[in-house]
Structure formats: C-alpha cells, structure tokens
Image (tube, rainbow, N blue to C red; front, side):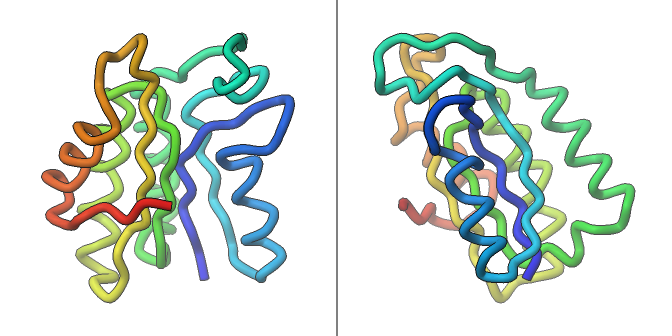
Length: 141
C-alpha cells in the first residue's frame, strides 16, 4: 500500500516521519515522506533549533508527486506535526481532493500538531480546519 506521510523530521530522536516511515516500510508499505519541519530534536525538550518549512515548499512537493501520476495510487495519508497553519491548510487541501475522490474507501489519518507559541493555533482548531477542508472527522493517534 502506498502511504503519503506529511510530518516533522528531527535529527536527534525518533518522532514524526523519522518514527513512522521505517516501521511502515518494514510492513512492506511504500511510504512517501514529506517533511514539514526539520528540527534538531523534539520540541518537548524545551529547546531546539531548525526551521519550519514554508507551505509553498510542501505544495511544490505535492505537485511534483501529482505530476508523476502517483497520487491516485495513494491509499492513505498520515499527517502529524505541521509547524504552521499554512502548512496544515496546504497539505489538507492539496491532498484531500486528489486522494479521497479516487479512494473513497479509506479515511486519511491525521494527528495535527501545530507549534502554538508561534502560530497561536490550538490542536482543536487545527483539527476543525482539517475536518472542514476534507469533510471528515480527524482520527487522533
């Protein structure tokens, strides 16, 4: 099964795509990771370095995958820490219409996490935004 995974990446530790991709590959799934941020470590440590990628970059990556004709073969979307509301909206709107129209038998799996001290957006708000864009309730992990 092909899975699009839109999540964070850390250099130290294992969260986001760093934690999701390898186990899914061990289960023989094809995983297409898109990193929303690249941080030195999990933000739970209290201090970290790195950057949140611009939503336009995420959009370009999704367009590139779509240009290869791959998105219709995507059977699931896994999302996690987004880093910004713009990325949340870009990812949700860019993927939901392409994948759910062709693969209506599966729900995207979402676990929206936004950096609230810089965005001011709560997890509940992010979940509502995603649900309103896709027309489906979010499944938390």
